[in-house]
Length: 289
Image 1: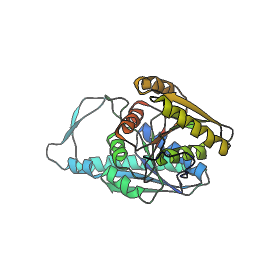
Image 2: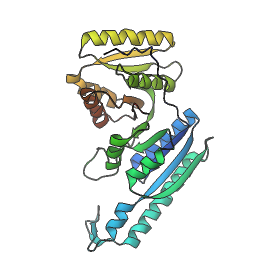
Image 3: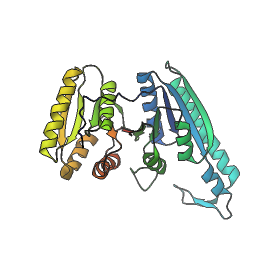
Image 4: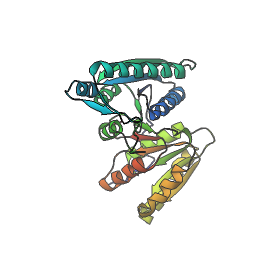
């Protein structure tokens, strides 16, 4: 199979419209902050959505539907009217937060409330956007830091670039690209170059399980950096000790991790380890992005 060189350029992702899906979780607040920051950087329009979960509303119509209070442990009946009022209150709160975040910045920002299946509605709305931003997980008193069901569904099915962010995570520098020698890897590389601040160093993570391949990729990347007048730092990692890398990434105060969401089975396995184990904001890019 012919090897792909970095010089065979694919451009960065183009972002003119950003979609951010919001709820009342702290992860969602982080998603809104990241979406606003990226909208300013790309000079893109921003669309916020709050989705009234049709599955939850249908559940309330079932007989004997009850819930246990998270703090009081009291059992109470769930009614459609009560649930609808609760969802309405949440949507008003989210709208106020969205308007507060976007009112003082020079971007086009709109917000809509929709009803439907949450991840399917996001996928549908995302078709008219260039980038989707969501919180990596919802609130849960027991599970702690885990991928939410919406994030899992979108990771599996997304066709547009997808930004995942956790509560307390901060978007910023350094920009870190997990690089695979492929057209998709080149797109991630170019997107990283597009987002890195002037004078900052683009960090590139390359698997060094095969020393010969690592040497070839390093030479190609240095050639690319020279031709683009870019400052880069190439960091090798080995699959068997990758958790050391995760610990280093999680120690960063802020940043952005760009991941090529494609490749062979072993490459995808490593990418999903990054998704599950790293708390930094991460941008997933697929071949059809």
